[in-house]
Structures are given as C-alpha cells and as structure tokens.
Length: 87
Image (cartoon, rainbow, N blue to C red):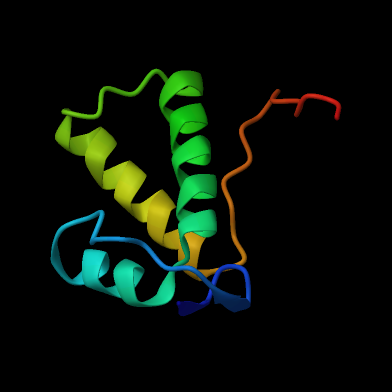
C-alpha cells in the first residue's frame, strides 16, 4: 500500500519499479497501481496523437517530463482537438 500523491489516498502500490533511476524510485514509493494505469493510458494517447517514436531521445525526454507532470502535479497536457469519449 502507498499513499498515492496523484489520487490523494492510500491504495495498492506497484508490484515493482516501472521506470529506472531516481524518478522510478519516486514513482514506486509514491504512486498507486491505479494512478500508474491512468498514466499509461495518457502516455499512449500522447504517443498516438503526437506520432511519437518512443526510441527517439527527444520523444523519451518529452514523455518523461509529461509523466512527472501527470503523476506529481495537477498539470496535465491537453491535446488540442481531443474530445474524450462519452460515457
């Protein structure tokens, strides 16, 4: 269990670190599985909408910045023209 900083409550944590380095450690200790799953969906949308290639160093840097912003702040990149599906 972790006190998830993204969702503001105690939730099941990640089974293992999902990202390398200090940022990965910070994510592992402070982000729930639920929040991580939300990030993966958002990341997929960013990759598709901006046609990113994850092996490109510029794209990786952009995605890392977006991941940190998404998980640890109230900021979230809004993709222009994107309309979420109706529930």
